[in-house]
Every structure is written in structure tokens, then in C-alpha cells.
Amino acid sequence: MTLPADTHRLAGAPLIIGGGMAGAALALLLRHHGTPAVTLVESHAIAAGEPPDTPSFDARSTALSAGSLATLARLGLLEAVLERAASIETVHVSRRERLGITRLHAGEHALPRLGAVVENRWFGHVLLRAVEADPAITLRAPARVTGIRRHEHGYTATFDDGATLDTPLLIAADGARSQTRDWMGITARHQDLGQDALIANLGLAEPHGNVAFERFLDDGPLALLPLPDQRQALVWTGPRDQVDAWMALDDDAFLAALRQRVGGASPRLARVGERHRYPLILTEACGQAVPFGAVVGNAAHTLHPVAGQGFNLTFRDLALLAERVGGQPDPGRLDRLSAWAAERRRDQTDIGQASRWLPELFRVRHPLFAHTRQLGLLGLDLFPAARKSFARRAMGL
Ligand SMILES: Cc1cc2nc3c(=O)[nH]c(=O)nc-3n(C[C@H](O)[C@H](O)[C@H](O)COP(=O)(O)OP(=O)(O)OC[C@H]3O[C@@H](n4cnc5c(N)ncnc54)[C@H](O)[C@@H]3O)c2cc1C
Image (tube, rainbow, N blue to C red; front, top):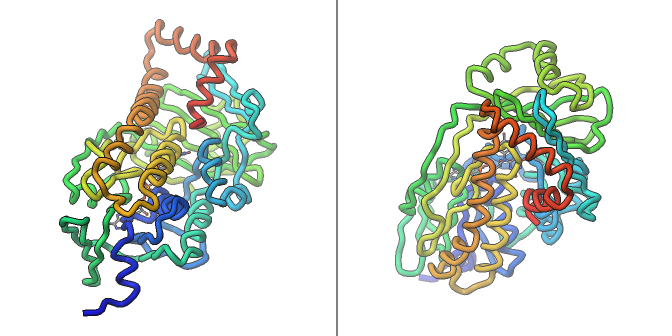
């Protein structure tokens, strides 16, 4: 039987399940590293040329580190992202009613910016526009894979419309509750922190000066990230019943409660947009590589959003994966995938632990801890070398 030319092309293509931030970014990175064709499957509809509205590309904003911006530049996407992003030139870390205040400045690192904040919908628009513009990336959306079967040379995936596709490399990028990860036989640990992150965009009565504020409060950490048009993106974490109460307030009462928490640390708040909440459930896959398969993004690790590291960490995973397997005739070789996962483990462990312990450290009320964390923040402010190494780590450099 003669197969249509398209089928031949797809037979050798890596298949990415999940067209969110991780899946879309990986498709572009694989192409950048010489993979001739990629198939990307997303369960939600994506209208061509319009900003997406999917679980990944929603009302949130993402703080992209300097390292992530450099990777976007390599993909030729930096200008488009920055078109609607606000630079972070200073990071201001503080704790309510305490001395410790630390400022990290772009100038100390000879960088134009420490990072940039972009609304997820715009970021998704830029990534998916690049996906659509590449004829070698087949985007199937809305579409679902209903089952996978492993064989000698890879996997065969069956779609909800009955179509099947052979792939030498299957990627699970379908989020924290990844079904593809389960199908590959990789288990995951989930830890419900009993907290939610409330997010909203805020209108300001004065410029934000490109400062990102991170404030450690007794309820949990709060971040105010600069956005274009004199706005900030709020990420406010707290126990679920506390978040219930914040969600129930009218806009004026909400702003008053927020002002009280933020104190004089941030510019004057004028308006609040729609509020959304996200349960904080940490996920960690017990592995990332199987023969002909890899797990990435939220499917591999979901972090506390405290330091805005989740996607930045993922982007580093993806850049190395694409470098190792991109353009290879046998991208699903287990030794290669295992070596990639091993190489990424240190960074994942360090960032995972930091984002797990940071909010805890700031919540403990023992005076010894209070003293230590003040010293920690003040120390960072007093000793430029320590601050520099902390910042370089957070920036993914
Ligand atoms: C409040 C909050 C703030 C954050 N802020 C930052 C930040 O400032 N900086 C940062 O670096 N990170 C941040 N993060 C983390 C960041 O959002 C994640 O790293 C990122 O969403 C991971 O993307 P993903 O594509 O792996 O997963 P997801 O975003 O979960 O996307 C998964 C995709 O797969 C699709 N899908 C699911 N099942 C299927 C299926 N069966 N078939 C096909 N498709 C499927 C979904 O529709 C979705 O599009 C934040 C997270 C939260 C919750």
C-alpha cells in the first residue's frame, strides 16, 4: 500500500502531547535544532492568528528570566515577546514589619534587564504564531490522543478521530495531571499545599519604575510584577479559606486589603481587574525518560509560584533536550534521554527546593528564624557578591 506523502513525513516526527507553554516551546526548539518535522497536539481549540485562550495561555502573566529571554532571542522571538512585556530592572524583596530588604539591580549584572513580564495570552500568541508559520510543524487542535502503544521503533498514538500516528519520540507536555505520563508508566507525587494563588492585574496611580516586588507575609508570599501600560500582575498566595475571603471582597475592599499588606513597598494601586485562583499542588514525576518517551513542563515538575521559576526551569530543560535530540535520526534512544534527564536534575532539585522552602522559612515565627531570614535579606543587600550569585541563579544564567 502506498502511503500519502504526508504520512511518511509524520511517521518520523516527534509527537508532543500538550500545546501549552512547554509543548509549543519544545516544538520550536526542536525545529531550531534541525528536527525535520514535529507534530503538536492540543486538546483545546486554537484560532489561527488570535491570542489563545487555553489552560496554559490564560489570564496569568509570566516573569521570564534573562536566560529565558536569551533563548527566545535564539528562536527569533524576543522582539515579538518584548513588544508587549515590561522589563524587570530591579527586584525588591521584603518582609512585612521587618528590616530585611534586598534589592537586585540589572546594572550590577551588566544586563539591560533582569527579566521581563509578559501576559500569558500574548506569550502564547507569539509562540503559536511561530508554530503556525512553520510548515514543518503540524498543529492538531482541538484533538486528543486516546491511547498509545509502544513497539520496537517508538510509539503508535491513536487519536479521538481514529487516526493513528507512529513516532520515534513521544513527549508528555500535557500538564500536572498528565495522562501521557501515566501511559508511559511514570508515576508522579502530588503535594497539596492547602494554599491557592490569587492572581489579578492591577492599574497603578503612578509608574512602577520596572520594579518587581516580592513580599513575604505571614499568610504566604505576594508578588507584584511590572506590566506595560502602568499596570502590575499580582500573585498573592494564602491558605484556601483566606483566598475565599479575598475573592469575596468587592474591588474597593480588595484594594484596601492589598494596600494594607503591601504597605509603602509598591506604587499606589488604583484599580483591580478580574481575579482568578490556582490551587498550589506541587507535582514531581518519578522520572523523565523512558525508551522513546520524555516528560516535560508541569507534567515533570510543578513548583510554588513564589519566585516565578516554573516555566524558566522548564525552558532550560527543553533547550537542552532539543540540543541533545534535535535532528538526530533516533531521537528516542533511551541512553540519550536518560543522560539529558540526569544533566538537568541538579538545577531542578535546587530550584524545586528553593521554591518549596522559601515560603516556609518566611512563615516560621521562631525568633531565631526571624533573625536568620532578616540577616539573609540584609546580607544579600550588604554583600554585592552574594546578591550577584543569588540573582544569577534566579535569572537562569
Ligand atoms: C499563579 C502562577 C504563576 C506563575 N508564574 C510564573 C512565572 O512568573 N514564571 C515562570 O517561569 N513560571 C510561572 N508559573 C509556572 C508556569 O505557569 C508553568 O511552568 C507552565 O504553565 C508550564 O506549562 P506546561 O505547558 O508544562 O503545562 P500547562 O500550562 O499545564 O499546559 C498543558 C497543556 O496541555 C494541554 N493538554 C492537557 N491534556 C491534554 C491532552 N490529553 N491532549 C492534548 N493536550 C492536552 C492543556 O490544554 C494545556 O494547554 C506560574 C504558575 C502559576 C500557577
